[in-house]
Image: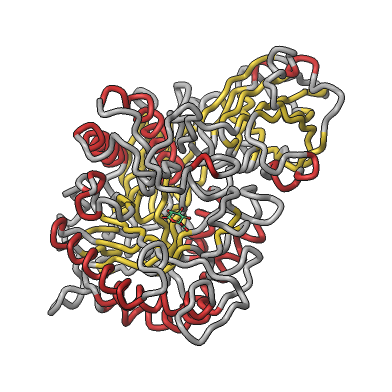
Amino acid sequence: MLFPQQNENRTLLDLSGFWKFRPDPDDAGRNEAWFSEGLPEETSLIAVPGAWNEQLAESGLKNYVGCGWYETTFVSPRFDRTANRLLLRVGAADHRATVWLNGTPCGSHEGGYLPFELDLTESVHLEGASNRLVVCVDSRLTMETIPQGIDPGAAPYNGSGYDRRHLFPPTRFDFFPYGGLTRPVQLLIVPVNRIASIAVQGSLAGRVEITIGVTGSGAVGAVEINDGDRGCVARSVDLVFVDGKAVCVVDIPNPRLWSPSTPHLYAAVVRLRDSSGTVTDRYDQPFGIREVAIKGGILLLNGEPLYLAGFGKHEDFPIVGRGQFRPAYLRDFELMRWVGANSFRTSHYPYDEEVLHLADRLGFLVIDEVAAVSLGFPSDRFEDLAPLLDAHRQALTDLIERDRNHPCVVAWSPMNEPNLWSEPHYQNDASRRYFQTLFDHVRSLDTTRPTIAITMGVFSAEDVALEACDMIGINRYFGWYTEPGDLARARVSLEKEMDALHERYRRPVMITECGVDTMEGYHATTAQMFTEEYQIEFLRTYASVADHKPFCAGFHVWNFADFLTPQHYRRVVLNKKGVFTRERNPKGAAFFLREHWRSLSRIAANHRPKGQSGSLLVEDVKPSGK
Ligand code: GCB
């Protein structure tokens, strides 16, 4: 789905502001038709975008999981219904949303963290009249949503003590289950015959393939490649659309490559013209030219070994929760640059599109993840996994459609830590087929980036999730959840496991999570969990293992910043594994990493196979899947 754009053919109106809001814990709203005459009397104000939990804590919303009704009014600009459409674009509604305009149902969408569009053309009042927009957002999750929720009827599972039903609100994961309209809600007036999708793929030689999808018929298209001040550097011939699609190839002489140190962006300017030659639609799609590949078990960017140094993150900020927060986005990039990181993972869900635009512009690499965190399978029969698999595939399709043109995205992560809860129905043929189908699905949509399977330690090298991926990500907490306080033993366990994984799969292995809860201001002279010194020593241990294994593609610390969790005896309000506090103040570990990552280019050199210099890239090195 295209990111919204304002230009001479497209009008963009932002509906951000204070809307009316009413929680609906008894699910009364639909029966009482709150959508037809507007919300009943007693409503609060709510800021959109923003999660409802912290901004309305005093109204009882802090731990609220359920339906919340939103209402706003707007006056639409005048437009011609035969030539244009009025679309509502919601950046994210966590987790499902239903929309009415002036009492008329306009559609619904399931799946948080990702945008959707609905057509309002037929129900909008024009000529200066007021329009009432009502959105019902439901934050409840089930065993068949991505992410999954808690099945309240399920038998207690493994008696391990960390029973998910002990969390409040109950979740399968330890980040807070914020609800609401967390990203912008916008109106778009676009032509009926319009550009609907653009996929750009450039090679290092400067050959760029652009695939364009359109709605409607009769238009002719053309593409120009713009290079900032240098103006147009390549242009296509006229394109005729067949079944709403056209593909063209253009060549950019002496292309400027995108990399973290030179994040150079081009724009593919796509125009549609009608039979009289008038431009009827235009979209400027930014893209970068760079190549990600795996060769001889080594991850490469533009032919050079790539070592990912950085963090797993969360979209979690005081008060807005997971709501869009532009100044904080910039602050996080500033801090990542300050600490010397080159990358992060969108753990554990797709992040705001604006974050990825910033990563493109500022030169950060991103592992892009869908919200399939802590998957649990309901059965040993593959057929029974179909509803979950469908939702999972859909989330991946939506993510790849949204993010495929971002040069910052270096890998797709289809899940985080399946089987976290050691539930039954995992190491078997059904789950094996599930993962194979899933990873094949990603490859069918994009062959230009590797897939990464991010797993935990229970089955280690035997984990059924590992067979289908291109790269292996491991989340390990030796020295914390196991071998607490004992970093010497932690190092041995980590090395043993990384070597075993490499031995068996011969693919890049990366530490995608490692970390310890740390109270800022707590100190000790000996290894003492929860102190700032322990966090430093823990990270030093993991970094030294990762940095020296040539097959290791990187080291991501868990977590960039402390984040809010559901209530549980294992967490003191926040997950405190941040290198920065929730307010973004540095703990001691931030200074350690800043010093350590000063030599990132020397560390990356350890990851070049012995005796190799110069570019490692050859034509056949695209991720193969095996
Ligand atoms: C993990 C999870 C992450 C948790 C982390 C922890 O393995 O992937 O979501 O927050 O452990 O701190 O326990």
